Amino acid sequence: MERKEARGQPTMLDKCLRILRAFDGGTQQLRLSELARRTSLPLSTVHRLAGSLVEQRLLAQEDGGYQLGIGLFELSSLVSVEQELRVAARPFLQDLFMATHETVHLGVREGADVVYVEKIHGHSDLGLPSRVGGRLPLGCTGIGKALLAFSAEEVRVEYLERPLRAITDQSIVDPERLERELAEVRATGLAFEREEATVGRECVAAPVLVQGVAVAAMSISVPVSAYRMPQLAAAVKTSALGLARQLRTAREQRRPPGGEMSG
Amino acid sequence: MERKEARGQPTMLDKCLRILRAFDGGTQQLRLSELARRTSLPLSTVHRLAGSLVEQRLLAQEDGGYQLGIGLFELSSLVSVEQELRVAARPFLQDLFMATHETVHLGVREGADVVYVEKIHGHSDLGLPSRVGGRLPLGCTGIGKALLAFSAEEVRVEYLERPLRAITDQSIVDPERLERELAEVRATGLAFEREEATVGRECVAAPVLVQGVAVAAMSISVPVSAYRMPQLAAAVKTSALGLARQLRTAREQRRPPGGEMSG
DNA sequence: GAGCTTCCTTCCGCTCCACGGAACTTCCCT
DNA sequence: AGGGAAGTTCCGTGGAGCGGAAGGAAGCTC
Image 1: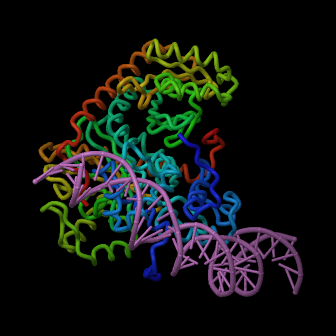
Image 2: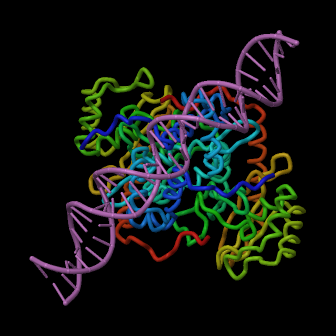
């Protein structure tokens, strides 16, 4: 393991990505000058690169502003890990949602964050901070705790060494307390979270274990008032187990005969 | 409108994208040499670029092979048009799926293809050629016909001018026949397709109209044997109308107070 | 174990393309 | 008309990207 840093100078690719990443969940359309500001790149540089990106459909130019293009969407739909996971998980999440009618999440670990890869919710989605493709600190979410508890020890240690990030005033900031909770999670196979990510909401999560390691985790999120945790916990655990089994068998019989796309 | 072509020479960005796009639905993991082959780029070039892409998490290097990285997934989740559409559409598709238990699609037009942005299906997904992020020719699918029928006339004309691509032996290849069908679609607000995309399957689709133009279309796909088209047609049309209304109101009250992501 | 093939990695000098400052053009709002 | 901000085009320079070639590391066959 080596640290590789100290880029002498940002390459063209770096700059292009800085442009693309200048977009965030809230902002859908950015003007050229705003892009330049956010990326701290010269205006003419942004102009030129944005032009290239538009050519490649990674950006779209619409009434005087730029937005992320459909080319990105197409590319990302091929991301293997998440794709395999999502396809397999969708029906299970579906079932979970239909049984409970509460918001359901699926997430994977990426560094010190959970990245949500799937989310199913009803017509009203009450200001949850989660978003498909979005990140939250592992320690603040049920899914994150489930992932962390069943990760390699080094991952856990490294996470606990750094200062814990808080999102709400209920977020756990004491490493020892989190460590105790993780031990509990390992013992029960269930992770709970109470207003640590969103005020007024709690959730229960279960890891999707393949060979003892969490490749993902799923959760159900409900308002704190509802006292339904026991049933929800059972449901989420069942689904997680089902998904894990599905992944295992899918992984065994690698390459089913059916093709994927024609054109 | 000008044709812009004749790139003197592929730029770094071009090459990077060629590498990323070398992955397709079926192939999840590619070795370096295979990448070089698919992209027709020199080995050392691919090696260098792939290294940069890995640094940026657009690629992931796993046991001697490359796969698309989670960075792509994160980026794409911000693609505005599709994102807005998906978030709004999800509940409607959900309802549709729960009511019918058949595979449900949402797609948008991109050039001469439909690009699927959402798909809900049960545990068994019987070899449909559709895939979220995948493309199919407009004329071969219900969603495509719905989109085409309610597109600007120039789009329709241009599409009908070129030779029609066929996927199955039932795919429409006669422009005049397709044109007649499109007129029918415009009249009824419903598009049908029968084994033109997949043998043994038919589907009914309805456009999601905003100011008279289809910004998307949704469909239900069933085995040909089932004689349930009338009910399914009604259901899909209702959902499409609901989504259209939702989009319209969402577009009016631009910028609801709630933020999106914290960290 | 020599010899072949295939795959990956590293090196390095040349070239050419990306770079961004500056000048120019709109298009606002006073 | 004047001031300001956003977007576009130009162009000389330098260094980053380029890729051929050589070097290593496996895994074959005979």
